[in-house]
Image 1 (cartoon, helix red, strand yellow):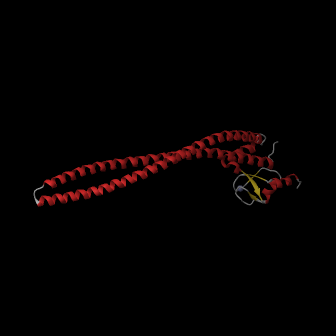
Image 2 (image 1 turned 90 degrees about the vertical axis):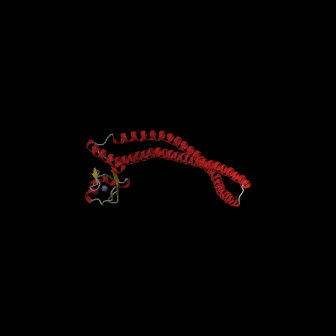
Length: 244
Ligand SMILES: [Zn+2]
């Protein structure tokens, strides 16, 4: 009849740990690529928003330039009327109107100048955002290539470790195998726990003297608290072969 030694269980735990680590690394790669894609999209949106802002401001500025020209020709008209006017009252009225128009134009000119400055700033911001976009693209491409290469290697490694697992599981007693499979399916490598001192390495519950004895007798023992299969560390196993 097949038995399960502490060495078998240690080996199984190590293999399951390796597989879990490999699976973690395989999952990490695509997450890094996805994060790179998010960064690219974000910089693209930044550039698009800045360009849109520039366009809107440019249109407002153009409109104000047109207004300014209209007002200037209006002032020219009023100036002409001023030269032709006949009465003092009319003269004063025109003078006031011209002053008000000039005042309004001065405000408009300031606004146009502000917009020109802002447009220059926006141009510089667009340039910086475009540089960030190029950089994000480069980093995304690099990450994608690196992950592609890594995934191939990791798949080979998983295949190798899986073959090792098949070999390690080959001679397990059938009644143990079912329970063992259930444990690793739900807990991964933690389904197998080393004994630490006199406690379960999985849940740290203190093990009874009887449980410890059974372990020293190389029986298959489950932690009564967390249910995982227990095994002794390498340097403690020799006692199992000693007579009681
Ligand atoms: Zn436990």
